[in-house]
Amino acid sequence: MTNQASEFIWYELMTSDVDAARRFYGPVIGWTVGNQPDYAEIQAMDGDHVGGMLQLTDEMTSGGARPAWVAYISVEDVDASVASIEAAGGRCHMPPRDMEGVGRFAMVADPQGAPFYVMKPAPPADRPDAQSNAFARYEPMQGHCAWNELSTSDPEAARQFYNRQFGWVKDGEMDMGPMGKYEFLQFPGERPYPIGAVMEKMPHMPVSAWTFYFRVADIDEGAAAIAANGGAVILVPVEIPGGDYSLVATDPQGAVFGLVGSRQ
Image (cartoon, rainbow, N blue to C red; front, side, top):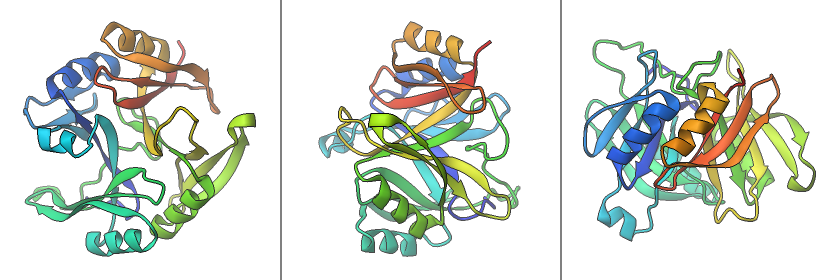
């Protein structure tokens, strides 16, 4: 991929049941999900691949892994990035490794415990200039990620960590009363764009974590599809700046995700 370093380039669902997740997310978001049993790629309606579904093994779950969405962030040097993250108080959960035709990657966590991957992707041999649009940076794209939201035990420390590691900067805030500040993040490249936001995690959340919001055509149809297919809406649709609506839900295996869409 030719994306700039420090961009979100891939979204991965770690799940206890890939088959069930495939049946759930298809009607909810409109994805086509591959038939591979261990790692099934996710394709949006426009044909772009935006992520994958990883089958959790018994070894993974015995080590504490649970169904969850995790993102990949592009870096120039995976090993150097892991060393920098650890020096800043983060952790390495999976050491750097290479996957032929895919790239080099590692799973890490920020100092507050929110996990993510860092990756130096290998571009396809037939498309050396290919870019990932898994995160729709510049315009709305149905089935792509529209927003990356970090709920953390220490928003100020987290913001400083991500600024030093990836160059992300604060770009305004919104007062949420007793819930604190909702601080917007921006990527300051040649074409600056909003990444998402940082907020203090709510008391019921056991750990700091990222939530990823995927775009659908109609937020109410998305909410109905979640309920009809065995998921649960935990934060009902609310209007957000710009006129769209967002919700937060869990899939049938317990992974948390969000949807963004208009109200028809």
